[in-house]
Structures are given as C-alpha cells and as structure tokens.
Length: 300
Ligand SMILES: [Zn+2]
Image 1 (cartoon, rainbow, N blue to C red):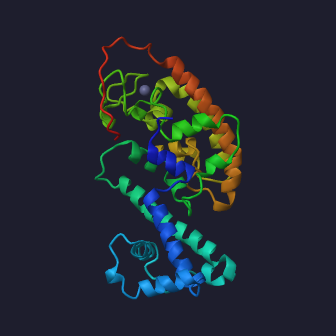
Image 2 (image 1 turned 45 degrees about the horizontal axis):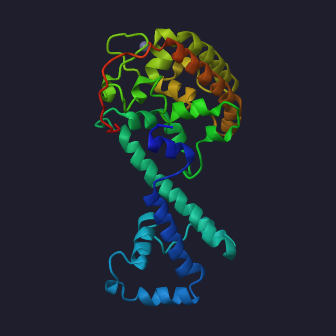
C-alpha cells in the first residue's frame, strides 16, 4: 500500500515512535518512584537520582526523567483517575493517561499543518479532511471507521490514506513514468478542466464525470443526516462533505449518536467507494507511451 505513512499510522492508531518511547520511559519512572519504590530497583533509582549530574546525558535514568517532564510536567500531582485506581491498577491507569497526553502532543503537531502559511500537500489534505477523527481522545486507538467490520473495507482505507495514486491525481507522489508534479499542479485527468486540482474535493464534488455515482451516495448520506438530526448536506462546507465521504462523523452529530452513525454509514461508504473506484478505473485514459523518466521520491 503506497499511502502516506503518517496518514496510515494515524488511521491505524500508531503515534510516532518517539512519543511512544516517552510514554514507556515515563511509565517506568512511575513504576520505580511510585508503585515499587521500596523494591531494590526503586531504591537504586532513588540513590542514582541523588546525583544526576554524574550520569551521562543519554543515561536511561535521565531519559526517564526527561520523558516524564515532557508528558507530565507537574509530576508531583497525580491525575485523578490514577489516585482513584486500585494499587495494582495504578501503573496501567497512569500509562493510559500518558497515552492521552502523547495523543494531545501529536494532535497539536498534526494540526500545525492546517495553519494558513503551510504549503499545500498530502499531509495537509489528510489533516483537513480527517480533523474530526483526529480529535479522538486517544490516538492509540484506530480511527472509528475501522471498527466497523465489512467485507469491502480495503478501498476506503486506501482512499483515506492516499494510496489511490492511479485514481486520485493528488495522491500521486511518485511516478516511474514521468517527473513528479508539485501537489498544486496535479490536475484532474478525467475532465481536463483547466487548472482543476485533482484532489478529493474536486473528484468527489466538482468533477462532472463522477457526478452520477457521487449524487447517489450524497442522497443516502443526506437521508442519514436527517435521521440523526445533524446539519443538512447543503449547509456543509466542501471539506466537511468530503470528510463525511471519507468515513468521519458529520460535524454537528451529537456524540451519543457517533457509534450508530458509523454502523449505518460506514458499510454504505465501503460500497460506494468500491463503485467509485470501478468508475474512475473505466474513465482513465489508456497508458501513455511517453518516454521513461524517473521522478523524484520526495513526498509532499
Ligand atoms: Zn475533473
């Protein structure tokens, strides 16, 4: 699957390793200073940390302290759920809390791509279409659409993580046939409208050649929006519309309906995504006989 690696990790619930490592180091420090502080390792840790200046900068003890400081700056105050947990569950509860803190840090980094000064690119597209899913408290859990079991899930996953370079022009980040165009110059190859960026918004909502399949999907989604008492399709922005088509819950949906929405809509979206892929496949021009030219593998 040649998708965007960050998009794939975010959908699957895999935050960056550097944050996961900090969670583990801070959890280990909690174990040695709180849960098992009277054990031999706990006592040794305490003695070592009397004189941390003698430790090399990469010493495990220092890294543990640094990680906890990063994720939990006021480490003297325990989170309420850790205080309330049974002694044998305290470490697990603390680990879960640390994962939420790591999720917050990662979310902040991802949302940075939405700032107006950022250049357009695949990561910005992923973040802006899937902000709703990225707002989930714990990014160590997979995106909610993945919890709905359905026979044809792979097409929607590929679409979400931008692994459709042969169908969606902006997903094309590497081409063996021709040089890589900049993101903003990856135009629609179906309708050939001048300067129509071939991104999800155009392909789903604007391109005249895909209108038939999309209008069928939109009719169904529109009915569901009414059923769940959410804002109507006509009041949504293009980004919000694409976001729903990619399996995110609608912006105004009450939280208590999220699970039901997913159960009702995700199978529909799977079916339509598969239909959509067949349509795009049939619209593609035959492979060109251009001379081979190696593109760059930079990944904007
Ligand atoms: Zn088009």
